[in-house]
Length: 119
Image (spheres, rainbow, N blue to C red):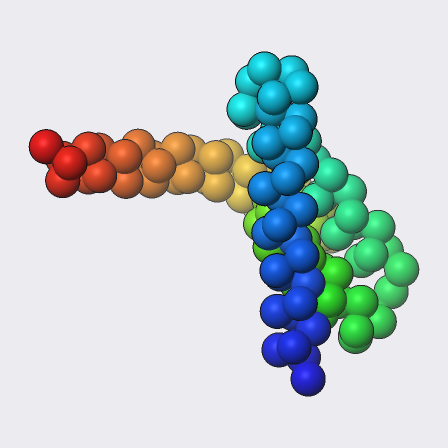
């Protein structure tokens, strides 16, 4: 049954991401602002649901499903917040710096490989 709830939430999250990122991006005439809005609002939702406590259905439907389909940045943000709450500041900031740096390198590498194949 968990797969059903996760899938349902993921489908809704993906559709919502497409709609809201496009809407906000067009509104402000910058696509990255649509993405930023999605990442920030997804982080807000996952933080809110996590703070409510362990409710299995909500975790599956909203946190894993909806937020997972909406943005994986929300998971990253929650994990970083948990590290900070644990007082593991060095690990938290290493997670932030490492994730940003490695993702930028990965997107550059993927883009370069895709461009090479297109030629």
